[in-house]
Amino acid sequence: MNNNKTDFDVIIVGGGTNGLSAGCYLGLEGKRTLVLEALDKVGGMASSGYLIPEAPEHLVHPCALDMMSMRVHSHIPQELDLERHGFKSIELAPGYVYLHPDGSSLVFWRDRMKTAAEIRRYSKNDAEGFLEFMNVIDMFLEIALPMMRVDPAKLNFGAKLKVIGSALKNRKLKPELMGLLTGSAHQAARERFEHPVTISAMCALTGLAGDITADGGGIYYALLGFLHRFGVGRVLGGMQQLSNAMRSRLEELGGQVITSATVTEIVSSQGTVKGVKLADGREFTARSVIAGCHPKVALEMVTAGEMPRHLLTRIAMAPANAKGSGPLKVDVALDGQISVPRFEQARGDGVDLRKTCLLIGTEEAVLESFSACARGEVPTLPYITMAAPSAADPSQAPAGQDVIYIYPPVMPVNPKAGWDNIREAVADQVIDQLSAYVEGIKGHVIGRRIEAAPDFTARLNTVNGCVVHIDTTSMRSSTMRPAHGLGGDTLPVAGLYLGSAGIHPGGGVNGMAGRLAAKRVASYLAKNP
Image (cartoon, rainbow, N blue to C red; front, top):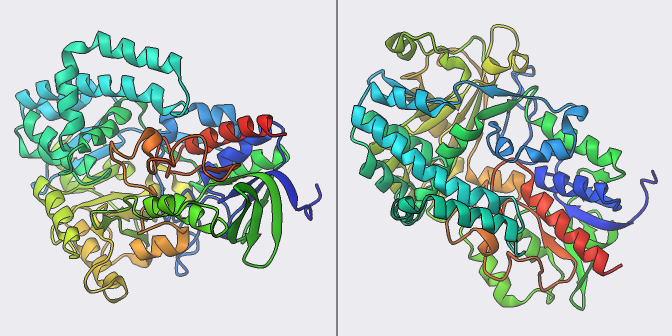
C-alpha cells in the first residue's frame, strides 16, 4: 500500500467504533477508505490502556466497559468477521446487581423469571408487577428493535410490517405502552412497585440512561429489556481489543488508518464535499466524507459558508447533557482485591458479586443527584456504579490485585466551584461512599485516574462531556437525531454524512451508526461515480 497517497473514495473523521465500522463496511464494498483519528490510537470511547503511571500493569477503561449494546446488534461483529481478528467476549452472569444500604441486594439476571424471584423476596406484588411490566417492555422492544437496525430515512416496509404485527398482537397493552413512552422512568417505577428495594433498583438502573424524572424517560427501561433479552458482556483483554480488531479488519480490506491526525476543516466547495485539511497542514481529497465525531464538531468544521446558518444553530443547541449532569469516571489500581461480604452473606446463595456490575443508589439518592446537578452542585448521597474488570478477566491486573471502574452516572457538568478545584475531593468522596458497600478499596490504592465532563470534552472532542453525543430522548431519535433536518440520508453539503452516536440509533458501543453511514455513502457513490 502507498501510505503517501492523498486521494480516496471516502475519508472518515474519527477512529472510534462507528468510524471503524463505517470503514470496514465500505471496504467490503471495495471503496478506498481513509480513517483519520486525532488520538494516538483508535477506539475513542471504546479504548483501554495502562493509564495509571503508578500501576503500569493495571488495565484501565477510561470510558466504555460493558458490552450490552453490541450484543443487541450482534450481527455487526459477525458481518465484519471480528473474531478472526482477535475480538472475543464473555457474558457476565449476573450482569447487574443492586445493593441497598441495609445490606439487601437485587440481582438483575438475564432470566426474567430469576429476576422476578429476586423481587419476590421483597414483595409478591412487585414480582407479579415486574412480569406484567416486562410484557410492556417486550412490546416496546418488538417495535423499536426492527427500526433500530434500519435506515430511518428509508421506507423499510419489512421492518414496518414487523412493527405493525407486534402492535396488533399486543394491542391490549397499547395504553400501558403509551403511559411508559410519555411518562418518566421514576413514574413507571412508582406506578408498578411498592417496596423501596425494588423501586430503588429500577431508579438506579434507568438513571444510567438519563434523568429519571423527565417526561418520555420511560424509554430508558429498554435497558431492562436488553439486559433480559441479550445479557451483558465484556471484551476479553479489554475494550481496546475490539477497536484493534476493527482496525485490523479495515486494513485487511485495503483501508488506511492514520492516528495523531487532527482534522481542522472538512473542505466543501459549491455545496459538495472535497476532502479534509489537518492541523499539520496535510490535505486529503475524497468524493465523500463521514463524520464519526460529534455532529456539532463535524458541521462546524465544514468550510465557512457551506452549511446553512440555521442548521449550525440547530445542532449547536441540540441537547448534550442538557440538564447539567454527566458521568464522573474514577479508575483505581489496588494492591489487593475487592470483596462484598456483607451483601454476599446476607444473600447466602453463593452469588459472586465481585464479577458483576454493582449499582448503588436509593430512589432518593438518584433523585437528589439529578436535582443537585441542575443546581451545579455535587450530590451528597451516593449514586455510583462500579465494576472490577479484573474480577471477570484476571489478565487485566497483576495476580491477586484488582483494577476498579467507578462510574457515578450523575455528576455536575459545570459545578459552581469548577472541576479543577474539586476533582480530587469529589473522587475522595465517591471512594468513601463506595467503601461503605465494598471492602478492599481504602488503604489499598496504588494510583487512580479521574475524568469529569470537561475532561471527556477535551480528550474525546465531544460536547459538554456528553458520551452519547446527543441526549437520548423520544424527540432525538430516528430522523430527528441529532436534529430535524440533519438526521436524514442527505445533508446540504453533498457527499458529507454523519456517522456517530449523534445519529440513529444512538449511543452505545455497537458500530450501527457507522454501518448506516457506510450504506448511505455506498449509495451516494454509486449515483455519483
